[in-house]
Length: 118
Image 1 (cartoon, rainbow, N blue to C red):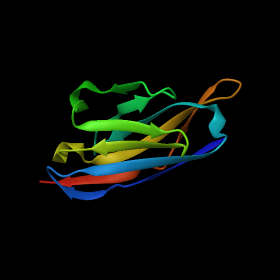
Image 2: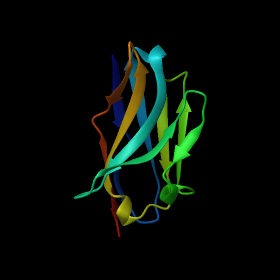
Image 3: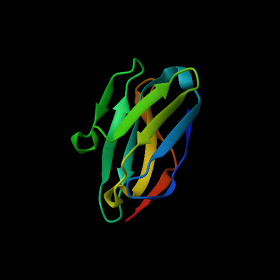
Image 4: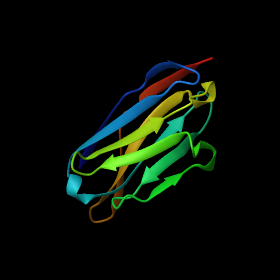
């Protein structure tokens, strides 16, 4: 099993920046992709970005240029740098890790709240 713990959320003014972290522990050798989803109030759970173990990154088109995902495999941590934040970025940000066992299993963190004030 893999456990994920997010940190770095908080309250920020529009135009500001935040850096989220998600640290993995447990059966980390089996982790492949890691990524971030977010859920705004009253909206669905949407993909923000993910990164493969080799460093290939995929972003939701609308967030390209403002958000950057990165990964430190030595620290078993994935990061999400969020710049020029907008009130619409407010939501619960959750990280995930895809773990290869007898089949692929997705593990989730508890989430970290990001609130952007106008």
